[in-house]
Length: 465
Image 1 (cartoon, helix red, strand yellow):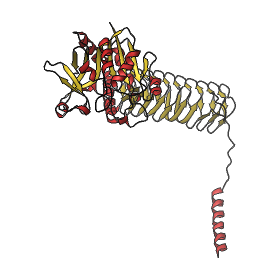
Image 2 (cartoon, helix red, strand yellow; image 1 turned 60 degrees about the horizontal axis):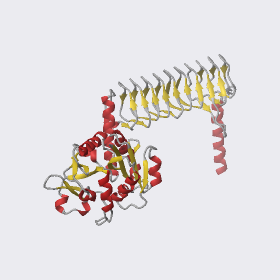
Image 3 (cartoon, helix red, strand yellow; image 1 turned 90 degrees about the horizontal axis):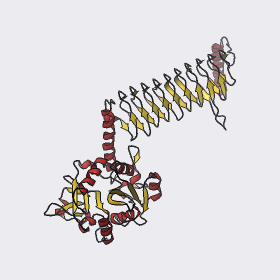
Image 4 (cartoon, one colour; image 1 turned 180 degrees about the vertical axis):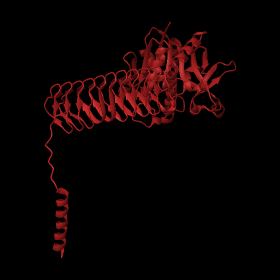
């Protein structure tokens, strides 16, 4: 028996007040619909079709190649969308899950339980429900005298007695494919919305309808507006942080740490408040990250320290340090034990093992050898107005403060540069590169300047008289 899934993602989501389709809004770094797809994949679904409509090209561009796509050209309701998706689903799928693309908290285990519940006895359909004190705008689940699901009433069509029901439709179903195809042909739009409701299939389908009540209503939560979006973000962040902490990561204040899906952190690493880990970031063991750090798509090795820094596409080897107030841009690589300090910016630069750029420098498009010390206020002038050029600084170099290296230029191993130098020519191994005007001293300059100023003031008064 093969399991397929149809994901409904064609709606605009007008309550989001957004130019974007609702299902592409991100949660923990992933489009909302991707969370649903991941859960379905984890539940063992073999074939999935996503039904797109509003903003179809935007949604399509974010979907993985492994899913099929069906276009609902007119948004005629969830029942019509399910019919459009079912027509594109692999014919081998005899059991069909219908899920909503705006339910990002659904865990794979709950979907698998729903499928198992459906297969536990002969049924045409099995739906997921949840029970709360006030079901708000959700469709109410009306049960018959035998306790089985009789129908689902949308909130806009419900009478007061039905609105008082606490059990609501979570928007996740498992159908027998033949029964679903048959009932979808018979649905109509005679309701307050004038749409073809998928929920009407529950009452009209040929066969028994069962239900699985979610243990935690949060798992069934959908996103209708920005408030719901924020609530789901909070829930996903809690899950991601809990998983890291149970894996050996310390967070003194978990609520002040932001983690995106796909981030990995090694054991005995401490994430201090204000830490944001994004994209494909990987952090090793025994690190100290934060406070006030943003790391995106970067790799940080074991026993590194990053404090009050911003890293994008950077790579830190074991024992490297960055910050405070450092900015590492794409292509930055700190070899073992290298250090970047206060108000330093790196771009497309490799710092050799044990090399240091302690403060107030910009090093771009450069290679710096091991154990080299870059003095305060150094700049690699890597752009000539037309092209970027590289600066190569060797091992064990000591550069003076306030030096500018006009690329392309090389400084050899064990060399030095004088403070305030503008280095335009290569400096050989072991040499001193110095490029500045000879200092002049004018004796008595201050007294003479004061006298000239006094004289000028007197002349101005005389002219005014």
